[in-house]
Image 1 (cartoon, rainbow, N blue to C red):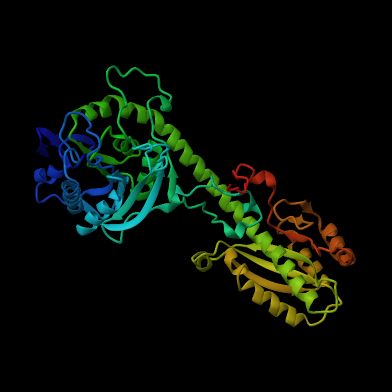
Image 2: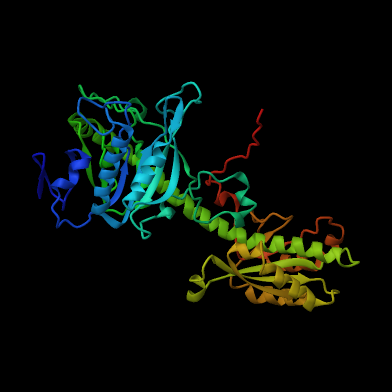
Length: 483
């Protein structure tokens, strides 16, 4: 327990908002305190632009170099108090003075690198509006920068927590091999609009206290950062806490928080306004991530099935084209495919980038010769891109019609066979009987001779229907016209 400006701070419990100048914070910290900060998210006050309240603060009535000196001193202190796995997110924006741009984010980055912080990434925060809104020689400004730093190369980074299925394009069904079954990694442009009290849908009366601050952080953006770079129980810190959106969000996500600010009015707003507003908002945020986890699980299952089925379709399409181009026979050599999904063993499950296993039995026309050459071509195709990118452990087999009948007979009692026809592998025609499969295989050769697309039926123990994955959102592609 220590005292900071007559405020008791318990490092075992935390969850405190302290009125303190961030530059002087370490003066109160005993030398025997172990590094305790896991995540820092902050937005330093603007330089020489706006005074928040009547309290002297960093950036007000300072030269540019004095301002940067304050920033460097603050983050040098926090570097020493941060764990080796700590991450730092700094929000800032460029300035315009005397008709030219001042690249404040880069100047801050250089100062932070001076004290040891490692610059890892740059996020563009599309916030709808920012300061200054617009001026001569500058278009309407709607974004700011978030620079990401770490104390070491061994930092917490849980990208799987914030992967989404929100931004899939409509053709993901036709090209499942191009999409990660765990969801899409967010790009580095984040659209989170600045919150206002009214925008949160609350009509509560907070008396004289209002949610006023030039740039309050959006709680959904804070939640994304907290989930990405910390664990439950970790310490989340903001040296320029303002109205404390980060702090309240961290507490509601089961993290401990510590915030500093020189303005006591903001602490009152934090306690009386921000905390109850975030408590209302957090359920919506949690619902979003719960839905994303559900959708990612569904996406993973769907992409897995689509890859197994498309593999055979794409192999036949490419091979038949090669065969017809290099022979005088226009009849395709493969008349049907039997695809049997198999379980991976423990060793196979640990194979990097492999998500499944399947045996492919390509049924050949009885009159076909040079079978060994065909098998070599198919195996070579399967081992190279694009087929090597499907993430499947595969075994390629060539069988005759008679061998296909024997195979289906031996597997008839193990599982049902679904049929996929007319080149459609994302929607099962339905379960087919043994007799129907045999009839189709025996008669498909004559039908293929008159089919310009050479589409062969696929029989598989993998079942997928469009109704299985209709919940997964997909954006329709729109071509942009620039005029």
